[in-house]
Image (cartoon, rainbow, N blue to C red):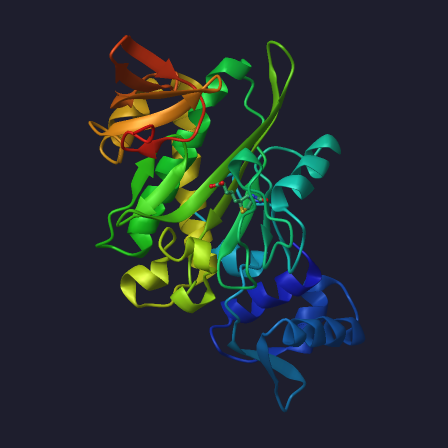
Length: 328
Ligand code: BTN
């Protein structure tokens, strides 16, 4: 934790009471001037901190920014997100996380951005990442699996997000659209981009990058997304704390990830099936440059979508599923 984050934690522990700067100096092991400088920095980050008469400080209000000092008190995880880093703006948190991974960062680091100016989606698409409205974050995972097992990890992340969104907004019914979109009422509320570096027989690291539309309003949406995207706010009419949504996702993800690492995807299939948007529907996919239409028949233990076609059952490992017979 940075010095500023420690100050927030100490002020928050005081539950609205004044904390003398002597206590802050002692706990941080720095001078009064250094504490004052950190407090000034926090104020410019949106923290309302009152200077009190006896040279102390009081936390009046925290901003809705997923700083580590806002996320950590809400975490119930042992590892995932315990090292949580926030940047106000970057190109892409997945790209930055890959650099951290190459530099030797350890598993479970989470990187969050207030805004991305080159947010990446699947299939080389752009991920719409406007300032401060939504969540953009990446996790670093180093499962010692063979690369083939990784195909089901996006579904594990999707399951965690779907459950977490329901925790935050009871009443909405998030569904998983294979391989890794989360939809509410048929519109996309979250996208997941899992990027992997592997040797032939061993994963070096996997970076699930997650974008959740939290407080996006219809007015913020560009025309091409208007009919396809939604947000927690659009669905419920409420404004959500991004720190709380992030903590909810991480809290849900860690136990699912641990189970997946230990026992594979099989034990999680039922939970994914309960949210499977495509099940029983006619879908069209592009496989090896060819359009294939069939009936989606669930997801198998290696993460493949089972497609029942006129030629038999085809397991599909990657691609974008379009509802209906798109070739018609
Ligand atoms: C998709 O549905 O196409 C996947 C979108 C993934 C977006 C997230 S936002 C955080 C992370 N950083 C990126 O550049 N992309 C992912």
